[in-house]
Image 1 (cartoon, rainbow, N blue to C red):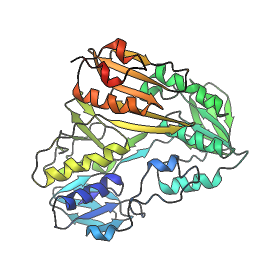
Image 2 (cartoon, rainbow, N blue to C red):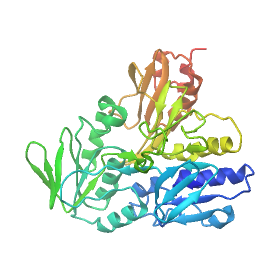
Image 3 (cartoon, rainbow, N blue to C red):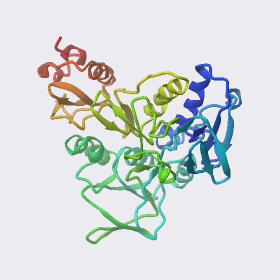
Image 4 (cartoon, rainbow, N blue to C red):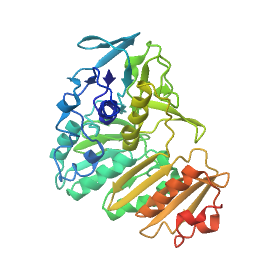
Length: 386
């Protein structure tokens, strides 16, 4: 059984079939919709370029039982409980993803997590609409991009010192602040929200932001509350080993809800991005079928915002040095994080070749020549010290 009707759940079923498993597979998904792609919701769909992001129209060819609109509520040994009954299983994959964090207050607030969320919000965007977005992270920035293009009056309120401060740190995130101004978006950093009120936001310390619509984009939490008391170890998500096995025999996890042991970075990581949902199921399916594979990637994600493509590879949590590759005031540049003289992460802005070569360099764990790495005219790969 696979619990979770998103990309990670679908990819698990696909990988099981691709690896020769011909037995029974059941996919349980809380949403009534078949699996769909989430990244376009804040990008192309919000821009009006498409209306549906369904991942495949031929689900029947996978030979899986689909139980959509059914929510998991509990787990015992060999038994999955849902709001529609109980299901026995031999192997179980947890792929329930994450759920958005809400703000306090009696006012209406929207989220951008599901396809229905996106379609409902897009229908409201229009010239002159006063839209308040709480959170200047990846989703907040992408939504601000689309809403401004629709002619809406957009205000983004961020509690941190800079956009993306929680994701990539304030020094790098601050370089994106000018993008908001160029798009006509009112960005307010170091501004906390006390509550969502009818008609807008009440700010901590006094003041308010008047708005016709409020979208909360302050992050997500792994959707694991239903596993309390199940015996499955939870540690910022479902704790799994390098083979994506949980603390319960026969139970695996993949996608946004899985916190995996990264041998590469020497710590447990949980990465909430598309690439994880795409690749983790390869390892989970292989090990379900008797393999002993390990999931230890160089994490990758991307964001399209304010006419720019930002791409991030690696993990900078243990970095000791931040370097610039090019001038952040220019249209294209990269930020490089090092640990012990080795490249561990890079953010690139409209420099895709930097990203590709950095990913290989991080995987190789080779020491780098700083003077070469920081010269944008020298290919990243040439900075490796061999």
